[in-house]
Image 1 (cartoon, rainbow, N blue to C red):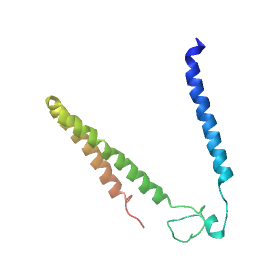
Image 2 (image 1 turned 90 degrees about the horizontal axis):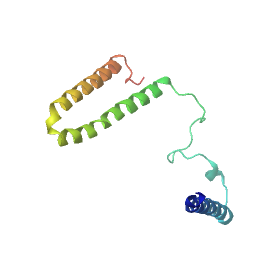
Image 3 (image 1 turned 90 degrees about the vertical axis):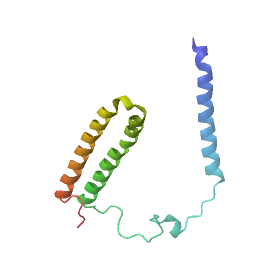
Image 4 (image 1 turned 180 degrees about the vertical axis):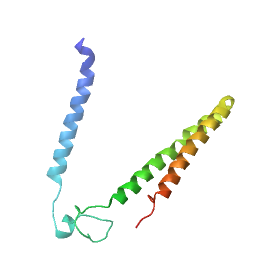
Length: 121
């Protein structure tokens, strides 16, 4: 019964040994010459402004969440388009479902716009 698992255990052992060897060799063969410039955090080639632990406005997180929500909802349009193209018999039902989805999405966008969630001040 355990003979069926021997190839799997050999592969897992090989992967673990290979990972340890590669990490050890990279640590042993690497040259480390730290300088002041190399130890600074990298920010798109710009000099660092302020502390990394400074507080962000809640508005930043609100705009980021709204972007993610609307971006993910727009991604749902692609599978719908494929299904709409491949299922012509149910195209009326698919069209109604997508119009309802886009209506809810538009209502949420208008609500966020009217509440001032998209204004950066």
